[in-house]
Image 1 (cartoon, rainbow, N blue to C red):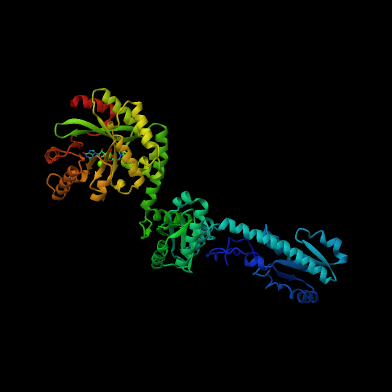
Image 2: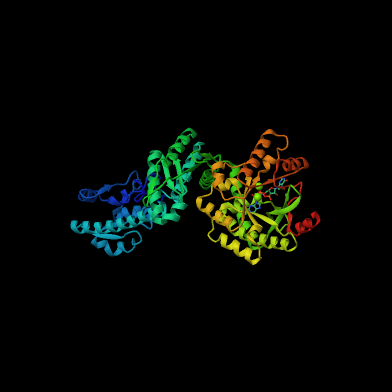
Length: 585
Ligand code: C2E
Ligand code: MG
Ligand code: MG
């Protein structure tokens, strides 16, 4: 039974390690049977008499080989001489059980009452005078045992709260850590391994949509399935909102049992769970880490398994690799530093020109963010944009980019570049913000810019994964006049049918194809196909990453409308760009 505790015996241990299944709601075995009475009587006759009297109702236990009984006891009855002999051991036993009450009752002749009872008060909780009145003794015993029973029940409840997840009744993070710690200790002594499996079920959406009750319901249903799938020799735990832990409950758990366990746990996905009448399919990511290979203590091994789970593909467990820990640390550090960057204005917006290939006129530019560290070092966007995207910080960075972009293009237009278009890279997360369009329009109005001055670039991969909602928002933006371009086109998997539905004006042919022209058959075919496709759909084309004259000539001849790349100009700070533009003219 779960939450079993060592109520009677030698000292305070952690919660019992047999606690692997959901904890039952009823009281523990200990509290149900708080009725083991230890008889410590030097007078043999008395001992026998009392034993006979008590054994009808209670379990009478005795001293074993000069020690208090290993199984423990719930109340001790001693006579004067026995108490003197056992007082240190009793004191220790009472102390070890604190704060749970372990009563000791003293039997003494009336004559000794005054002299003895007072001195032993620190150990003795109650006394009866001999010759013993049976009814009185039983009454007093009952009262003492009731007090102990209550203390045990409270302790059990406390143990449950501290060690078990309320919604699923599985061991929680605390207890699982304790269990893994114990398993590692045992494995250490024998030179064996311990494998920990972390399972992630993305439940944040459930919480957002259905609230805490919905989440609890989903977690309980999931836990039930996990228990069923895992089998009896597996310890399961709920480590957090969407994190679970599993460990083979066995001294030696060879790796060849871990993989089948992962396979079994991943079957939780097979059938949807119903939350508030809606079917939810719990998709899992599973990571595995081991002692001693991936960490020497429970904390490290569990965190390694969790890191592995974040790297896993659906349906396929990932085994921890140390480089992932580095990557996670890097990610955390970058995220923290990005907050500073925003607050301290460490971002710069650089511009890279786009040339109209037919007549070499500058049609506009792409705005590319740069992060200048206090040391002066420049961080390229590839190193921090993914972190900003996954942490949601991009939603604070993009407004700054848009404001800076609008101010910049307004300045360039005022200086004579009348039809200049500035392209800004955005993500679907930006566009899906409900006030995105309103803010962009307000910025344009503030700088007296037509929407045509701004183009939004979204990568093909991102667009393919975007919901109908965001596509609708993009369509509305396009309808009011903002340009929409698909960046890195050719690398995603947009089908022709899908492309047709997207609200776009421009395809930016990905650099990897530009790299291969002229000369490489595959790149040549793809590039020409994209140009043809764009013509059919009446879209503009941009070739990005042009690095030499041959590429430029080839793309110009092939009919690409705009070109961008180091061969024309590298990205540069906005001030340098104004000067570059004046010289180009
Ligand atoms: P992208 O939008 O495809 O930008 C083109 C990237 O190619 C830029 O790298 C640019 O500097 C680089 N590039 C341009 N011409 C050449 C060339 O001839 N040769 C080579 N080797 N590279 C060339 P960058 O600035 O490092 O940006 C990388 C990516 O970061 C961008 O790819 C874009 O996806 C993202 N990014 C940049 N700025 C922003 C931004 O302000 N917001 C968001 N959300 N993403 C941005
Ligand atoms: Mg771009
Ligand atoms: Mg690109």
